[in-house]
Image (cartoon, rainbow, N blue to C red; front, side, top):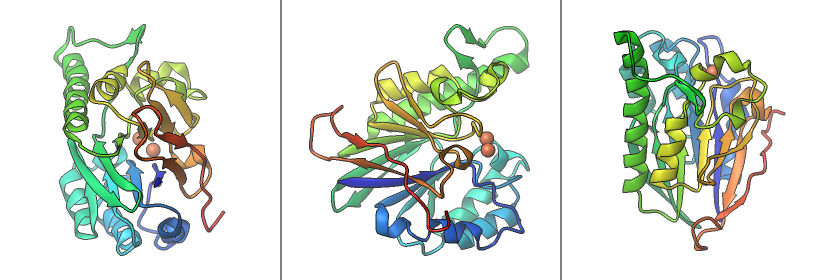
Length: 256
Ligand SMILES: [Fe+2]
Ligand SMILES: [Fe+2]
């Protein structure tokens, strides 16, 4: 059994020292790794990242993260990433990692992702330079995700993004803003690269469960959606691909 704890959109501010540490204190007893699905800070300030890093440093399980749009807001994502790395957090943007656990190997491929919308209601790289830049960014990051997933050799493969690959998990958000919450290109990348689970955040008013057209389970772990400190997903390693995804129960935190 491989157990993954996941949460996104913790939006840590400078005045929030201690809160996340308490919420995550039970993770080492219940999971083999912690995945963070972006929007880790309120405004992407290094001072906020320092608070977050202190919360995560020495937690006791490997931590893999992607950044979210909030973590880019101050145009200092490299500094935020470096601060988290110094605390032992692996921040992925188009890369992948393999975590060895007692139950087998856990592969994680991560990108922030971006918007653009979903089949039947999506933007295209046409017209103004700004519109082309918007969609091309999504295309590039989706390609990076497919490549990272394809490179992984692991018993269980997880795709980690901030933006949503499917519309299912956006249910509850106004449909008018779906193109700013995710893109079907991410789901195509996940189906192409292969994954046992896709985890994302960003949609605070969405819902937890979804699935790609290719049958990959998708989970929105925005903290406002899971209403817990973190969610736990468990996998049976060694079964044939597609049969490994054992359960998707939401874990409870020590503070709830
Ligand atoms: Fe958020
Ligand atoms: Fe976000």
